[in-house]
Length: 82
Figure 1 (tube, rainbow, N blue to C red):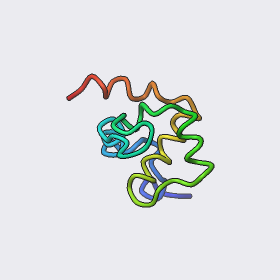
Figure 2 (figure 1 turned 180 degrees about the vertical axis):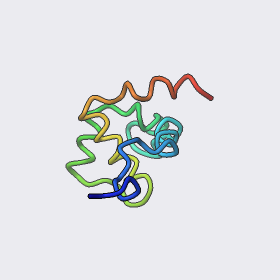
Figure 3 (figure 1 turned 90 degrees about the horizontal axis):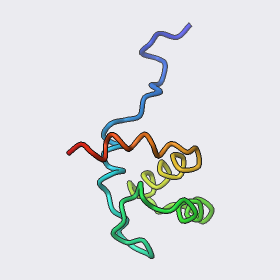
């Protein structure tokens, strides 16, 4: 049996969630839009073509998972906080 320290956390990383609501798309049709506010079809397109390398690609991959699973509501409380 695994100890609690060996079980991965199911809670989202607060720092990653903050990045998703503060990081803007740096290029393309939706340049300047917050990553979490990118339209789902655009993020799905990226998933099919391949995400960019580095942190932006990792964040877009997370946005993809959030959007295809309908979890955008998790960000409502964060939007109203500083």
